[in-house]
Image (tube, rainbow, N blue to C red):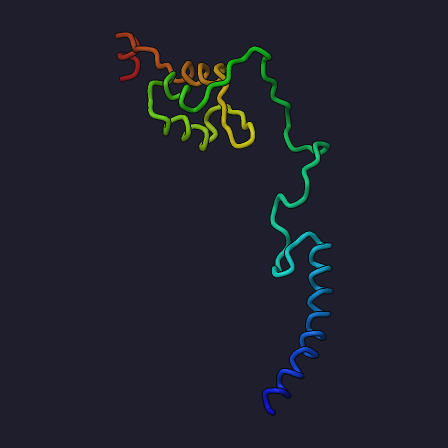
Length: 130
């Protein structure tokens, strides 16, 4: 008999609690967050509009510019794929994101190679350096 009394009380308790939970869930969804979280929504939950000042300049890419994969860039640099990936992660080379794919413009790869060229020192330069 004691258990019958307990089961009779549970639906009424759930109905009261369920009503409050439903209103909290509706309010949370209206605010753009999951009902089980108490924090503000994370970055990137609002749809991005292109009208803002997100970038100071609009980079342009030539119509006929060749885009290299990370593997092709590694072949051009004659390194493993880890090196171009590290350059991308450290933002030391220009790259393009196409969804989840990363492409490196060939001009950016050549520019990176040309910036790394070190001219040999002459004997006069060596005397001045000492």
